[in-house]
Length: 233
Image 1 (cartoon, rainbow, N blue to C red):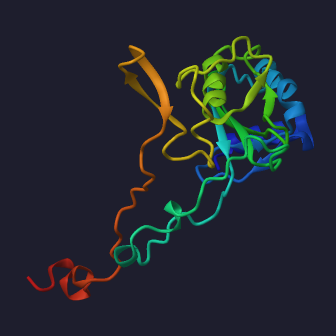
Image 2: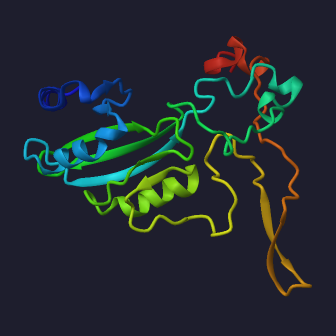
C-alpha cells in the first residue's frame, strides 16, 4: 500500500471511525465497507469535504455473492469425464423468496479524486430485503444515473431516489435479471418473428441447456520433463 493511500486511510479513520470498515484489497486500492443507511451521508462527505474531494464517480457495479467461494468446475478429470457439476445443478430461482441472505447482493462504488490524485472503493450490502434496495447516489454524482440503471437491469437491485430507474440493456419485457447467479444460462424466453402475428413475439426458450467448458489435460507426454526447454533437441 502506498504512503498516500495510508495517509488517506488515516483521514478516513479519523473522520468516520467505525462507520467505514477497511477491507483487504488484492489490487492495492483502498476499499471500505459501510452500512447502506450511511451511504448517502458518507458519499456526500467524501465528495464535498476538501480533505477527500472525491468529485468523480467512475463506476457503480452490482454483485451477487450467491455460491461465492464454491468450486464451479472440477477440471482435474475433465478430459475423461466431460462436464462438471456446473451443467448438472438446476438453477434456484429466488425471486419469490421473502428475503435474501443479507450479504448476497452488494453495490460497489469506484471513486476518483482528481485534485488529490486518489482512488477509493466503497461496498454496500443491500440487506435481506426482496427486492434488494440501496439509496441512489445520483443526487451526489449525476454520473451514477446509467450505472444504477445497469445494476438494476442486470441484478434487480433497486436504487431509492433514482430519477428514472428503467432497464437499460435488456428490453422492457425481459423476464428476470441475467447477472444473478441463479438466472438460467439459457434465459427464460426468446424472441422470434411470428408470421401469423406479423411481428416479433416472445416464446418459451428453445435452447438446450449446455455449458462450454474447455477440456483440461493435466498429464500427458507434452508435459514430460524430458521435452521441456528443448532438452531432446
